[in-house]
Amino acid sequence: MSDTAQRRTGGRWIQEWQPEDTEFWERTGRRTANRNLVFSILSEHIGFSIWSLWSVMVLFMGKDYHIDPAGKFFLVAMPTLVGSFVRIPYTFAVARFGGRNWTIVSALLLLVPSLAAAYVMHPGTSYTTFMLVAALTGLGGGNFASSMTNINAFFPLRRKGWALGLNAGGGNIGVPVIQLVALGVITWAGANQPRLVLGIYIPLIAVAAACAALFMDNLAPMSNDTGTFTAILKEKHTWLMSVLYIGSFGSFIGFSFAFGLVLQNQFGRTPLQAAQLTFIGPLLGSLIRPVGGWLADRYGGSRITFWNFVAMACATGVVVYASSIRSLPVFLLGFIALFVFAGLGNGSTYKMIPGIFEAKAQDRIAAGESTDDAAAWSRRMSGAAIGVIGAVGALGGLFINLAFRESFLTAKTGTPAFVAFLAAYAVCFALTWAVYLRRPAAARTAAQAPALARV
Image 1: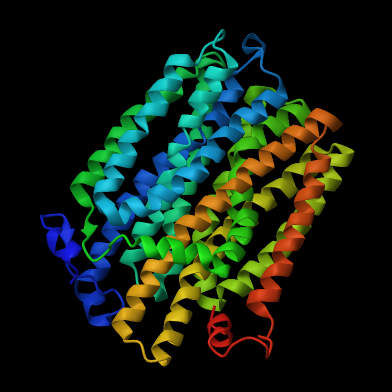
Image 2: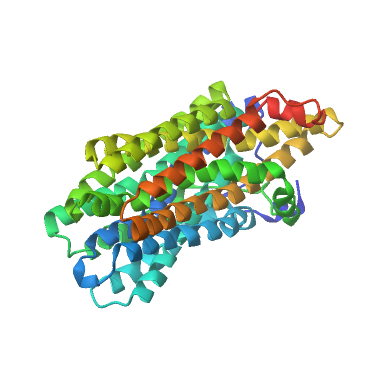
């Protein structure tokens, strides 16, 4: 045990954790990991809701707010930008402070954007103020990275796809839940009562922090290694997987934030009419994410990811057609399919990340490294990769909202943006096939070829 681990003592610190040991896992590991998973999902769920807060706040912004559609798209893009950057420090905070401890802190930090939004949400507030407060909600995006890094350490490789899918899916579902809350507020109290949404969520933040304090654990064997961060930035698969995650998760979060505004501006829906539809896609995309992880566990992450991007390209083709003829039913069919496949791809791409480094760890063992050292290396690298890839992937949400902003600003329709998304998905499925699916070329090294074949 490292010196760092030895200094980490107390009732909520677990000193030894060997999830790949089947006897350990069946005796105590499974129960402890599942308990931490449940309360990690709760905290991440609230984090996602706060991260997507402004996707519903803009529905309350009528003419009295004097913000045009382009301004609203930029407003909902700001949290994705901040959320992307904070994911890096949030990832490494888990190893530095402990998963339980950081979950408590990250949950309580959500009070800052929530209270700020409750204070400024009224006509007459300057656009700059709204932008600053929207930026604060980016803290909710960081919760995803720390939660996924933490849960990745608790589960054995054979169960990571399902566990990470459940964790992320439970978090993702915070997006449609807050949209349903907003729908209820608009339906029963009208479109001039946005503070009621915050009145519901502020107590829930306190509940999430309390549950983390009471029921979660820290893993002492997890330790920060600045060399790991440097190494993961030099690893080519970090950037290749980041591109794929931009296509899957970036699409999910970007569409989730923009869907209501697209319906209002492309099809003339009122805030209530938009709110009645916006939650459907994010809800289905969130629910299916664990299925993407399960399918990846069973059939291979790269295979599921490839066909998923093909399906996303087809769904986007339907959306382009519906957008050009202004058919709302066909548009909804294609757009909801996009959400479903984006959610499925979220699960399969995240399964690929630990799989890549576990395969490389096996190659290190074959080269003479001890099994324990190779396993520790794999956990450190995959944990760091999850944070970096999650951060870069979240930027896809920013790109999508900026694309919509430019599309509606210049063409008064979302069709050009959807054409650009279609091209992006073609790049993603071509990249998946070229790097992770086709037979490794003879020019690759002997160490690389087996690793990629097992992903």
